[in-house]
Length: 475
Image 1 (cartoon, helix red, strand yellow):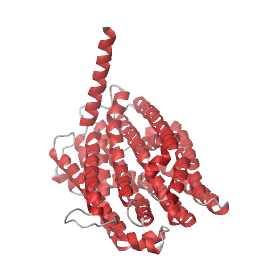
Image 2 (tube, rainbow, N blue to C red):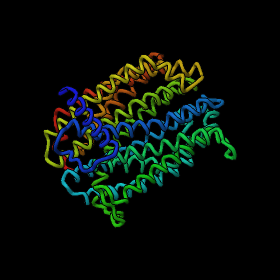
Image 3 (spheres, rainbow, N blue to C red):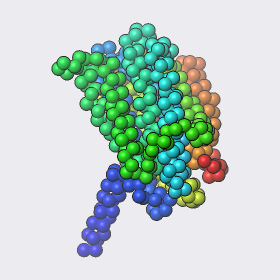
Image 4 (tube, one colour):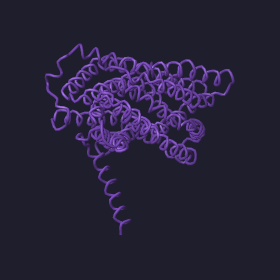
């Protein structure tokens, strides 16, 4: 009887925690109480949020992979996503800065300052994206050719690129506002906005790509329209909750008046944060271009297919590691340094378990997963090799993500920037080039360089984590 009661009590606690995580509970104090519960409350919605972000690319990949001339379409989606990683870098960098500052202010029990900081970050986003959108619309075709696309493929897909880069503000706001919510400890709102955006995308993709009734078939362009509409609806949902006044952050219109002191402080944190992700993104862009020039259209399409599948699994792990950023930020704000360290170790343990599981899944079922997204046998062959090779380093990817979020959550954005510079530009890119070109390994050399470099980056991150500079940073 006692054992039955214990089991019921345990199940009840698990169910209550799960419900609390999905609903969003800003009354929970992340600077006290159970660290495991704190990680779970943040990690569950963050993992689901990042799963939804990764679904965007997979949904597009699935539907365009079944169009005529699918190798052109897949390559266009993949190369455009590679370029969009620069915009993602800006968005993640700004989001990370907003999370760090908002979390620190919440840890200091100053929600007004947290709300003001979040709004100043949005002002910066509008200023940056007005330039990026115009650039993407004007130079879309040139961008695809520069990335290694053939002229024929670029002619076929440049309008997709125009729409995707031209709508960069939606991407930026989706990441940024979610970063504000995460810093405040409400990861559930961030998750729900991505769910809404993806549901809209999944519904609109087949309709706009293939047509339905009076709605014409837009083909590849339809995928871009569906994704942009879905993200825009997700942003509207975020804005509604920002101004509803029901959460810990109470937003007022006056907070949107430019505060150049606050803007300068945010930029000071965001600039190296953006740089660290731009460094990584440019590395991925170079690798995509190297695969395209050594493996042709089919090699490029295969690599992009594998990369999209890999990112589907890695983004949830990034979501889990985001829990470290919020917990480190809030606990450093509350002067709870030892608790911040324990939060990092707990999050890392969970991420290792998750990534080890994913590694096994991709190694065993990789061929079946790839077959779902393309009918082209040559594309399948390259994609299978790429996925098997890149997945070998998944465990190290998981640890590295937690360390990056630890540094960024503490406001120590220069440390991971330096690690990325040496790891990607001075190690991964030269290694990939030498293997692909000098040793004539082609795309295979690029695939090998990825897990080797990521492992080196993670080991370097462990070294700097133990030095402890991140504990002393003032935000």
